[in-house]
Length: 179
Image (cartoon, rainbow, N blue to C red; front, side):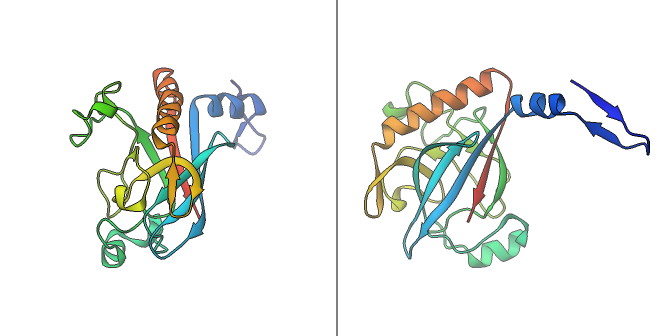
């Protein structure tokens, strides 16, 4: 890793350093493609490579920097997608809701959780097919049916295994939600 000081005293990160920093981070990106009245369909990318589709609640145009009070005023509980922005993801907090569910037995409810989402709490990436299953969370699958994703369980576990490996390797995991 190389960081060197330039003539004017600034630090310069070389290509080698930039590559090393990328190797210590996993970047998940959700690009919201279809924003309808009752749900939002998006595309999920992991480190720039398309992974799957997703479904979320209605996109109400919220963004991370607009202030928590303003977000709470526009948010409809259980019917609003999270604000656009970049959030840290952890596998280190167990979901009380999913800890004892048979479909999450493999991970004991330690599923991907987004941290510090303004105006929201308990935002997870989990199994489900319809926006009504999400309560603000992100549901993975294939958008082969209007208003739904299918094969969510399969896609969730593929995603979980990739994220778990990154976590086990000590990588910082982030998700960026884009319009």
